[in-house]
Amino acid sequence: MTPPQGEAKSSKITEPDFSAGLITAVVQDGADNAVLMVAHMNEEAYRKTLRTRRAWFWSRSRGQLWQKGETSGNVMDVDSMTIDCDGDAVLLRVHPHGPACHTGERSCFHNRPGGP
Image (tube, rainbow, N blue to C red; front, side):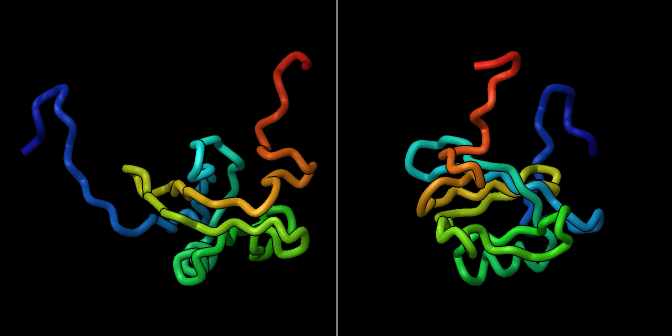
């Protein structure tokens, strides 16, 4: 039975959908809700993140798994993970140990369109 127009269809997703290979991972500071970065996860990165409670991602440019902060020391402890309604994205709420951006900025979202 289709729900009446305007009513939300209830769905309980407990696992991401990796059928396309990668899902989007949005990383948010658990203390103040700031969006720190967006990355991608394959199933291995997702499972390692769940198991270790540290943020792991899939690098599309390098074609390899990587732990955030493995070289810089700016690791991210994962406080919680939630899956979106389509199962193709995950939200990580984290406790960052240093800047999220490779440029040294707190967040990767520090560039404004059209200039400063």
